[in-house]
Image (cartoon, rainbow, N blue to C red; front, side, top):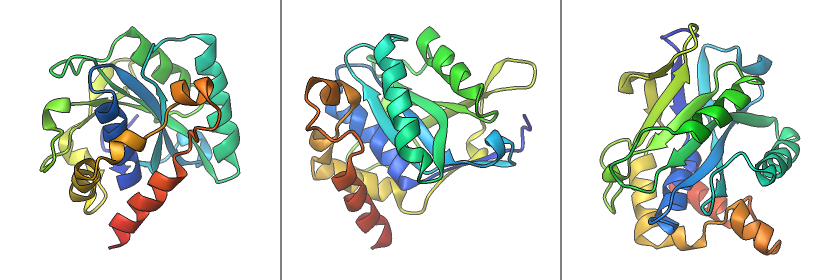
Length: 205
C-alpha cells in the first residue's frame, strides 16, 4: 500500500459516523464505510462516499454481524458501491485506540478490498460548531502493520464540518438508525434514506 494514497471522505460518511455516535454517546458504536467498486480496491485513492451504522449494543464478531454485512453488500452492489472500511467510536471520549474487534473486522474487509481503512472517531472534536476533522484514519501497510494516515492525506468534502454541525444542532442524530434497531423492529430503515436526503440538501446549498 502506497503511503501517498489519498483518502477522500464525503459529507454523508462523516455525518453518519458522527450522528451514530451522538445518538448513543454513552456507548461504543460501529459501522462500515462504502466506496465505489473499483478493481477490488487497487486504486491510488480511497473514496469513502457513505457509511452504514451497524451496532451500539455489542460490537462483536457475532453471527448478526455477518447477516448485517451481507445485507449491506447485497443492497449497495447494484448501486456500484462496496464495503471499503470500518468505523468505530469507543465508549470513553478520550479513547481513540482500535480494539481487537475493530482490527479483525477491518482485516476481514481488506480481504476483498486491498485499500480498506479503519476510522476511529475522536469524540473530543465533536461539538455543535465543529472546526477540525474528528476522524483518525489508519490502514494496514505492506508489512502488515497498522499505521495512522497523516492528516494531509485525508480530505473531507467541502462544507462537511459545517453541515454536520448543523445536523447536530437540529438533533438529527436522534433519527439515525442502525442494525440493532432494525433487527428489533424491521420497520426501522437501516439505509437512513431520509437523513441521506437531508445531508444532500445541506451539501448542495
